[in-house]
Length: 108
Image (cartoon, rainbow, N blue to C red; front, side, top):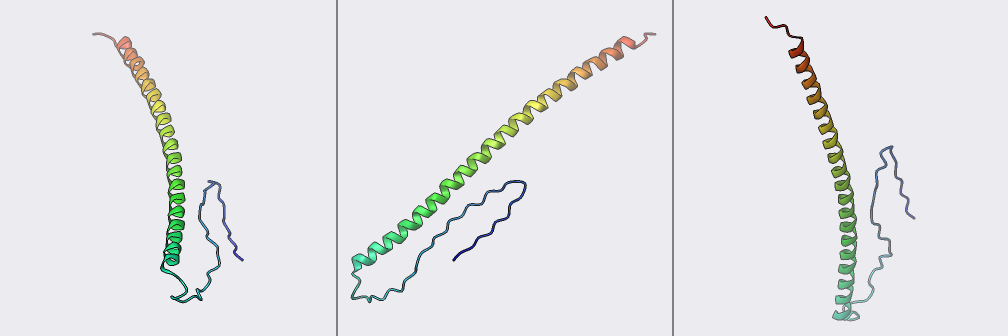
């Protein structure tokens, strides 16, 4: 019996994990009972399971990186537009300020 407890926060973090549950049996067969071919098949099976598990992890990781990259690109675009609007506003304000100084200056 297995129990897992995860806490959540307001940020909504995502946790992924892989759990392999199985029964580990002791091999009661001796070397004379297991042919080299059977041992080779078992080794290939274990290696394939590890490979599938690693590939699943990598696919999940790439997906998470893509989501992060999309979010970052959106924020960069938003802040660039906001900065441009701010700079245009400052430029317009400076133009009006300089015109007011020139128009209100008394020539001697």
